[in-house]
Length: 115
Length: 113
Image: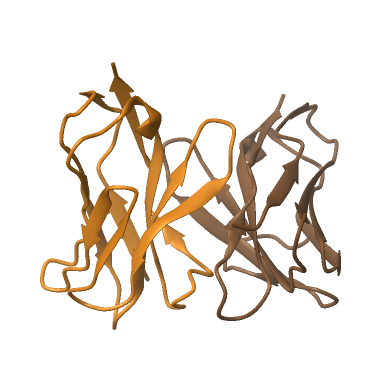
């Protein structure tokens, strides 16, 4: 299958700082990317959907000013957690697809810890 | 809204044991159902899927049948191997391709030699 690379795999940051997570499709053009979040012992929850060149669509309850998503190219989407707080500590994972009816492939995920 | 519930882990089995990981869902209409597997340090990989009632998805010796009457999609394997140790996620989607997924909490499987 296609490869999606997510970076970094782990990051620790101080409260109040911002953290950027990258999601890259290595061998295909990703017209759409999805960002998920998983709290400990809970399900992966869809945060937002981003289409290349347009604004992301956020799920209900997700603060778009807190979680900035950029999908400026067909191979890269970034999620920036702004002014991070300990409650933002979580596992973030992206997926990417090349068409509306094609399988979405997942990155390895990023474990964010805010101290 | 849609939701997926799967058994909590970890599930610890000996090699060649029979595996069942239960998954039930709540959704209106006819969603597509999926099992994903995440090996240590890797991203989620699609293991199998079923897009309509009574369909059976299968891959790598794993099977799951879409049961609308019980709203279930239990994962089974007749003889597990150490290499099957991973976290397994049950999920549903309104899209046959598995986009915009609703996931269960994941079940960690540990297989001992």
